[in-house]
Amino acid sequence: MIEASHLTILLQLERYQQLAQHSEQLLSEAPQHQPAALHRIAAYLYSNNTSQALKACEDAQAFCFDHSDFWLLKAQALRLSNNDLAAEQAVAKGLALAPAEPDLMAEQALLHLSQQRLAQCKKVLDNLLAEHPFHKTALHTLAILFNYGCHRPDRARLVLKRLLQQHPADSDTAQLLARMNTPWQGTARLKQLLQLKPADPQLRQDYKLQQRLRWAVIAAFVLSLLGSIGWFVPGLSTAWLHALLLSAMLLSLPLGWHYPLASRCWLMLMFPLLVLQDMQPTVANSVAALIVGALYALALQWLLGASVLLWQKLQPLASWGRRKLNKQRIR
Image (cartoon, one colour):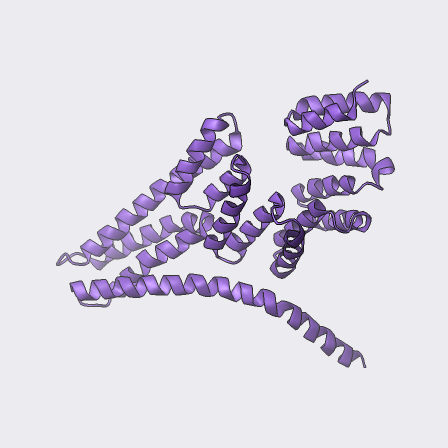
C-alpha cells in the first residue's frame, strides 16, 4: 500500500502525473483517505488541469469538508476558473476552521486583488506578513499590488529582491522580478533562468515576450529620435513628424501595458515632442522641453502611486462615514 509520505515527496518533486496516479490508486483501496484525496486535487491543480481539480474537489468534499487545506485547494481551483465569488466562499469556510492559516490569508489577498479591492488586499497582506514576513505567495501578491495596482514598480522590485535574498534559487520569484524589470534586465534574467529550466514553457514564453518588447523599445526610440531630428530639417512636412510621433506612441502602448515603468519612460520621450511642435527650433528649447518632459513624467508616475496609496488609507474612513450616514437615514 502507498504511504501518504510518498505522495508528499512526489508533490515536492513536482511529479504531478505520478502523484495523480498514486493518489487514485490509494483512493481505490481506501475511498475516504483524506491525504490521498487532497494530493489528488493538488496534482490536477498544479498541472493546470482545473476542470479535473474541481471534479476531485466534488468527490472529496463529503469527507474533507473539515480540513482547511481542502478549502484552500478548492478556492485556488475556483479562482483559476474565474469564479471568484465561489472562491471567496471557500476561503471563508477555510478561515472558519483555521483563522490564522497563512496560505488561506494569502489566497484571500489574491482574491481581493483580482476584484480591485486594493485596500482590503493590503490590509490582509499586512496582517499576514507581520507574522510570516517571508511568505512567498503573500510577497508575490504585494509586489503585484505595488506594480500594477499602485504604479510603483520600484517598491515591487524591492519586495521581490528581499524574498530572493532569503531564497536565491526560487525561480518563480526571479521570473516575476524579470517581468517587472526593463526589457534588457528582464531578458538577461530570464535567459539565466532558462539555462536552469530549459523545458519550462511559461519561462520560454516570457523570454520571447521580453525580446519582442525590447525590439519595440528600440523601434519607438528610433522613431522618436527621427521625429526630433526631423523637426530641425527645413521644409519637412509636419505630417511626417506627426506620423513618426504617432507610430512611436502606438509602439509604447504594449510596453506601458506590460511594464508600468515603461509608461514613465515613454512619457519622457513623447511629451517633449509634443512641446516641440509649437516652439522655435533651438537647442535651448529642446533641452528645456526634455527637462520639463522628464519632470512631468516622474511627477505623474509618483502622483498615480501616491493617490492609490492615499485612497487605501482613506477608504476605511469613507466606509465608516457611509455607514453613519445610512444609520441616520434609517432613523
